[in-house]
Length: 226
Image (cartoon, rainbow, N blue to C red; front, side, top):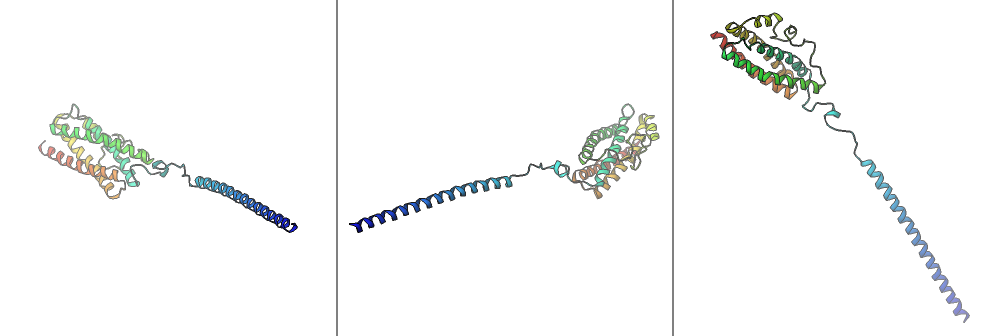
């Protein structure tokens, strides 16, 4: 009887120990699981923070490059010189009102006004986008500037002489002066074709060479019959 009681007591003791051990292991497992979840959460948060993209803006303003392309000093000089050159051509064309007689001269005057004012606005926009001044010290482009450094620019006296004429005399003088003026523009445009980098500026230079060379040919024909 005592032996049976001892065996029974030992069985209960072993069972109790096993139960306690199981509970201890379960508790440890729960702690590890909770700890693992916490680490996982912390790691995910850190990863998200590290992977977040920079708020630095991109595009033309951050790169410093104008939206219409790269450029060099030749492009800048082309625009700075061609603006006053075109402005003087428009001033010459403006004198034709009430003075020009030949219909072909009037037709060329209209073509000059139609083409060159928009080109001036384009070149001013380039220089603004490039962060460069409109003038490089070559004068404002008016007849009083003397056209320093710009081939074909008229002197103040040239402009006064032209303004003093009317009819056939005006037509002839206008053709003579505009041929020289256009030749200067074509020379500057060819320099841009050879040395410029900006595709838009070079395209305008191509237009200047093509259109003004054709106008020079037309003006020479006018002179031949006047």
